[in-house]
Length: 448
Image 1: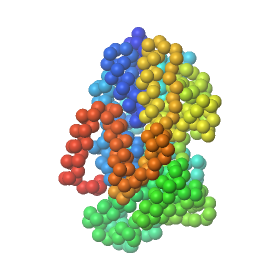
Image 2: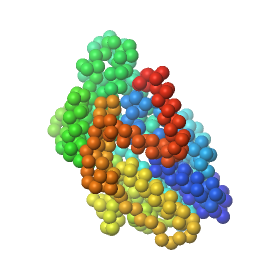
Image 3: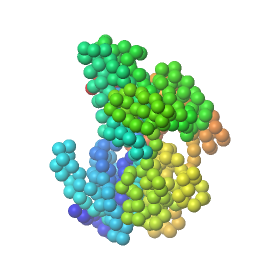
Image 4: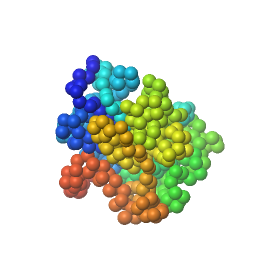
């Protein structure tokens, strides 16, 4: 089926409803869409949006996703853009047309047939997926945390493992309640701390046969020499100390060589028993981007773009966020050691620039703005135990290490800024107040 929207207007098609793509669609809908200057269409394979940095909390059970998910159709209705459910899998640059694969329900019945969409400006913002580097058994026995569905799947497995241990006749077996997290980047570190809290909360709700300190173990495996290898040393050292206080077993300098249904093996010969393995090491762009209709990609499938975020072989196609390899300086596109890091702040900055870019294109302007990455620092949240970070760039004129309550406020403000970009200040403030009130009558951990 072919898209038959009004052909007189400029068609902007955004593929990917993550934080950057959804913010972009919302802002363009509020400006160009509302005024009838362009047709804005957002395409995503999910019906709802959850801010990706929250996925580790959903996996651990400290957050109920139903209270934080946003329905794309509702957002589109409120902000004057169109939402189409599906997954892009083909591109025809000559026709300026993308193809969206058929959509099936949980029983395998086709709900929506294949469709095509015409575009004048195509913006690809499909984010990234976990890169298991082809490690034997990783795709079969480990769970990634790329989507809400995966996070919820891990939580179900964790909850079932606790229930099984509570009701079985024999004692808890080695690895039965041990969680192994492969990758000590921000996701792995934050998940390990969150799990330390929620597993003990869960055990306190009537699981009296389980001794949390004795039976529940968390191991963090990192191939590099320290946790958070991409962040400043001082931040890494502080986080490492906090994790060890929580009795998280930190294994640095260990590369996983195989994952089985019994546990993981490392290159040094270690075997760590575990029925619950999370893979949080490395990223790559989705496989379908690899040379899609001849577009230039790098070794991890990212689309190579200029600083205008236009792809190198087609100036009508833009890419941003984790799926794009954008030069961080004036160097030639595609130099891996000089590209913008795949971080949420970069996607937010790029989305803000693309709002202006699309308006220029709709107005017929030839010169487009160029993106310059600004590093404002990093924050790592260890749940109720600690929050640490470093502020950098124009905020401090250098690097400032922060921790404690101030760091926690800064961390929480990132999510509030995302909500404000989607809903406006007053809606964000009222939602926050409602959640503060409702938490007083709710359990602090998801019990099912």
